[in-house]
Image (cartoon, rainbow, N blue to C red):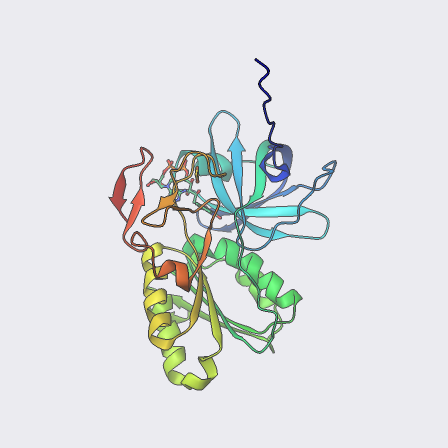
Length: 292
Ligand SMILES: Cc1cc2nc3c(=O)[nH]c(=O)nc-3n(C[C@H](O)[C@H](O)[C@H](O)COP(=O)(O)OP(=O)(O)OC[C@H]3O[C@@H](n4cnc5c(N)ncnc54)[C@H](O)[C@@H]3O)c2cc1C
Ligand code: FES
């Protein structure tokens, strides 16, 4: 019998590239930015977009998803890691010259509006600021004004302050909030967001888009506020990932069967509305559904 096997091409973004760490920068306690070049000797180079992620492999340890937190025209990418477990600890301790494997850019991205008339909010908490940092760079490049709200538990956990400082003050308003009140207003990003909405007129925000990333409970509260004010939301969600490319099903969100690695990680209001798991459940490493 002559069986013809169809050979599917391996997508260029799904090939692991071995790259050397060029720089490791301490951002704040337990958070580091790692830079590496993805363009050199890469004939299939793909420019990442804000919101996309990579699967980052530390030899002998694990492979984990990490958002791209920056990219320059020379193909120097960065990821920003919070040390919370075995693999993130290994990434955190990488030095210049160490080798890692990088697969990506993977997933979808934050779509940037074509009209500059939209009122843009960028709201992040904790390590959720990593993809949002890249987004703010892109918005600034396109000269799109935006309001940035960043929350952290304490002042020492606020990230990228130096980089946000050099953004054009005429087009960017930055609000910081900390839970202990050690910097900016005392409270959480959702409170700051509601205060801004209530202070200015509804008319001003009828044409708004909110981009967010951070703890899912925070994202869910932002979603509820956006629903109340009829504001479009683009939220980047996290789930435990094994393959990062639609094979293992671990990152599935019920009941739509959407995969965070392939259909996300960025989801818009219309989809979030129909996700029963959103803000409530995730899957653990065995695939069992557990409360967030
Ligand atoms: C699309 C996407 C983008 C991400 N971007 C970043 C980023 O820019 N910076 C960053 O520091 N982290 C990011 N994460 C989270 C990061 O992948 C996890 O923190 C990491 O995989 C934990 O691995 P570990 O071996 O250090 O922890 P483990 O020892 O495996 O686990 C430690 C704890 O983290 C939880 N955890 C493990 N994996 C994940 C996961 N994928 N998402 C959420 N919680 C998890 C576990 O349940 C456990 O409670 C992202 C996750 C996704 C899905
Ligand atoms: S991580 Fe395997 S399907 Fe999404």
